[in-house]
View 1 (tube, rainbow, N blue to C red):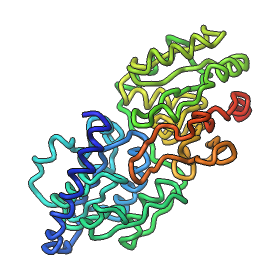
View 2 (view 1 turned 30 degrees about the horizontal axis):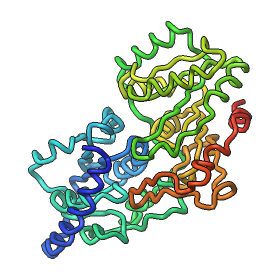
View 3 (view 1 turned 90 degrees about the vertical axis):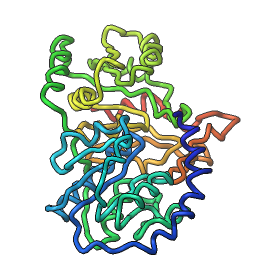
View 4 (view 1 turned 180 degrees about the vertical axis):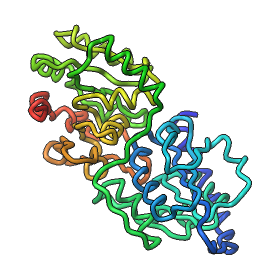
Length: 361
């Protein structure tokens, strides 16, 4: 099911269902103890990475509780092999759950379907306020655009009376067999001092998050003695090849799009000296793995989505070059095409290759 269809169904079918199910809240009973906790996260790889501080905080505040996460195939690898998560459940298998959860956290910023799922599975539910689906929650927090997204998620714990603060993301876990594959690749290609590039963006962003100067930046960094390793999904391989064709020193570039599974990609990124990326999932993966990360922003604001962590950098010109920026309504899942028709994606074009290169020490 494509993104447009999912959003259409969620909006026009989900809204009436939410209000139809609202009376069921009358039968809610506050749990006597919190023995079973469910986290729902169905969308967006990078955004899933940002939920891990909350889940880690849940483990610390509820050390004896079972913590499960409901996911889709596309984001499940973020949560597997993590010792503070008991079970990762695919959405397609969720109907096999035969016992209520005492506490459910709906970490989707806008989906009605996740709120409906929470009502079906949980005695007490926490989610974002000020939306039609919010009627199904027992506790809710405001989606704030003046703080990082990790803080918005942690607010869901704070509304229950628990405090937890973090300045860093939590590391993604990779099995030794996947690390071995990546180590063999690095040794074969004699990769030691290399920089990771992510030139792609999420399918829902309509290409408006893509920075057009990666080839120029590649030439500058190769002259400084670095090799460039491109990271991407299989369907981004040809797009990356087009960028490489515009780099003069092609022998110092490697296109890994489609070569590794997701866990192996986590470890490949972890081995980069620096990682330079559009505002998309691999940027947050790099930050989580402790790699010095440079995030390139235009339609989105780094206030919400910066690569979190000490020493990481967000480059964003925003309203200095386009009065319409930021133009993505994150709490509504709305990713419009560039609304500056006279000068499309001027916000991304305004970032120069030299400006990015000066941050690579």
